[in-house]
Image 1 (cartoon, rainbow, N blue to C red):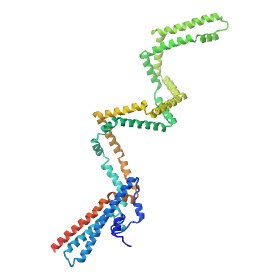
Image 2 (image 1 turned 120 degrees about the vertical axis):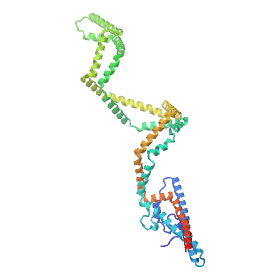
Image 3 (image 1 turned 90 degrees about the horizontal axis):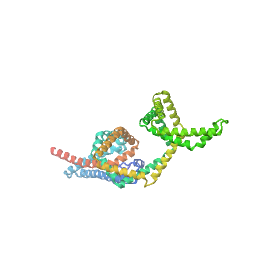
Image 4 (image 1 turned 45 degrees about the vertical axis):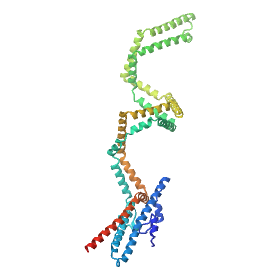
Length: 452
């Protein structure tokens, strides 16, 4: 097998410093797929930087090897070259050792499956779990969140932003769009069914008897029912006058045939006039005995509704019949249709009263939040407590998301991503190893010569 030159290794990011190249299929598998043009450009820039640093590190190794060969051949004639030769020899050792250490993180050196090499691809899942645990235990904690939020007055910033008229208008426009989208996404049948079920459930849970009894007690307590009775009696009296012809005809039908017509007229006139007089008397006299009788009947009814099991059951039965009546369902559908149409009209009108009120409310709230220190403290405390609660509740899921995401990565892709992030810096280890190794070799050789 032929080995590529140092120049080829320097320009090929997949070449080992010793010359072993990576197959094209391996390169394709290792290349991450960028999600955006910006990400692709950044990845390409990182690859170029990595290639350049690898070339520098490899150049130092090749240079040290060349110096070693030259000085070794001339050392017998020029003994002082031993110091240079020892420096170059130790520099090669340091460079190769650090190349092995850096390469072992990402792949098998020279493609030889040496134990404890290719650490990242082989232990990718363990690294993902460890990273998730690290983030969970060191970042997603109550102390960290509280400390981070303590010095940031989010409420004051939010208030200042909302207080700006342009921002308040923007919130109002966004609210109109959200309102329209929400209304259009709702099916009328589903909304009607939900409303009917919610209303029916709430109403069925209420005992009708005690509720009606309480209402009657309140009406009787302040005398409102007497005023209502007076109005009703006067309306009935007016109806008796207005329908005199109908009542006269009805009486003629009910009277025996042998009764003379003048007698019928006189009887009807007396009854008709007496009924009108009686209705007005009761309506005008707040102390009429009929009113007292009515009060007693009403109080008895209220007591029965509150205490009598039979009356309470009857009231609940009437309540259930009312809930199940088709007319009520028709009414609820009409109500929802009217409400939806009104809201859509407001959502479509940029100058609608709803939007104006909403914008004004947003701006007013922003001004108050900006200027009221007490309110700011409450909002900041709520934000902090909510954030802490969310973090503590979901910290396990966050760690699991990190671990599962890394586990789904292809091993070569994960290796490529990590190497692009830290590989350039790791090449400095190789450079430092070459320099430090050379210096160490020079010191050791010098000490050996002094002792010898």
